[in-house]
Image 1 (cartoon, rainbow, N blue to C red):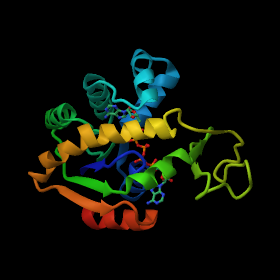
Image 2: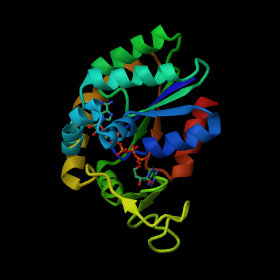
Image 3: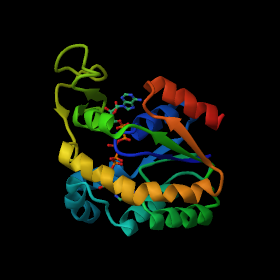
Image 4: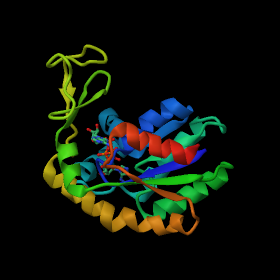
Length: 214
Ligand code: AP5
């Protein structure tokens, strides 16, 4: 099964993808995570992507479609994939069709997480993660049980994404409205889009997605 999780920054794509990975044995392919790893490793892709990401813009279609194709080739043909943050533009949607067809795969579902943009700014600007295990926290909604100590691994270092400030988040949202939301009709025309209330509690969102996937 191949699915796309679509929604603006902070809609909960990464949160839901991680939960669905566990439930269905699928693999999450997050272009955001892959690009951040490339930035950290100082690769050529990372060097090209960093300034664009920090400003809230979109990295070039060729780069992201290239890394998606490469990553799919590393997976066995029977491993289902959750696309998180890809495709984000019409050329990326077109590239994904070609990438999947070349590997004997096809899209089964597109899940759009519908959310309120003002709430998203609050979600994103307050979030932080454990530097060691990446467990997610939020200034107001989810703090570690013991202050300054990660619940999951006991680590004491935490980090915030450089693009999680309000100004950049607003730019990312504008990119979503202008370039990503317009690709939905492509999938609507195929009858594979389901809209899910992304403002519901995390478990309820997961349950709604599971009801679609079966
Ligand atoms: P990317 O990493 O994909 O960021 P994003 O799309 O902006 O999405 P986020 O990771 O911020 O949010 P999310 O929807 O995953 O929400 P999350 O689950 O974390 O991309 C970053 C950058 O990389 C882009 O700006 C671009 O530059 C570049 N890039 C990436 N892909 C690209 C592509 N294809 N093409 C070109 N450039 C690309 O949740 C957010 C917070 O909310 C968390 O704290 C979470 O705990 C909380 N939360 C989640 N769900 C709920 C809920 N239901 N109720 C309450 N809180 C919730």
